[in-house]
Structures are given as C-alpha cells and as structure tokens.
Length: 123
Image (spheres, one colour):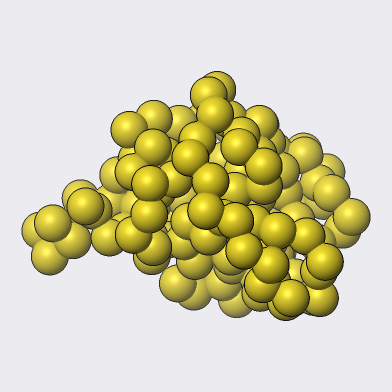
C-alpha cells in the first residue's frame, strides 16, 4: 500500500501520511479525486465521496489539525483546528505539515485535489 498521497488546495500542496486500513485502500482507488469541500463549524472541511467506503470507526475524543478522516461511510473530512469531539470517525491519514492548512483551505467552500504521491520510497 502507498503510504502517502498529495492534497492540493489552491496553490498549496500538502503531503498526507496514510494509515493502513480498508478505507485508505478504497480512497487510493478513487485517485485522482477532486472534491468541492464545504466548511463545517469553522474547524473542518467536508465533502461526500462518490461511493461508500469501508468503515473502522473509533471515537478519538480529540481531533487534531491535519487529521483526514471518514465520517460515516462516505463523508471525507479534513480538520484544520484541534478540538474535542463526541463523534466517531475512521482514520485515513494526517497532513504532515499542517501549519498553513487553515489559511490554505480558507473560509467557505474550497476545491481540494487528492492525488498519488509518486515517491519511490512510498511503495
């Protein structure tokens, strides 16, 4: 399994470290993928995926800026704030350098492109 992918929002490009699970494999099979993501609660971007994915939900208690998770079976979420949550998610990955993530995603709707990160050491 690939261990990283690329996430692009506007001119900003982020490397996402992927966690090994069935949901990650399903997401990788959809790449490249362009999503129009909506802002939710001033702390995350959300979009519905074109198809349902396998879930392995857990209750993290706290989500961190840079977390990439599946909500339900078809909701992809990028968190740009760290906060406590009562919700359950399937962990997919984490943006490696999330310092500029909030400013790159902006407020409101944003188009995000997910693609394979083509590094030989990621095989």
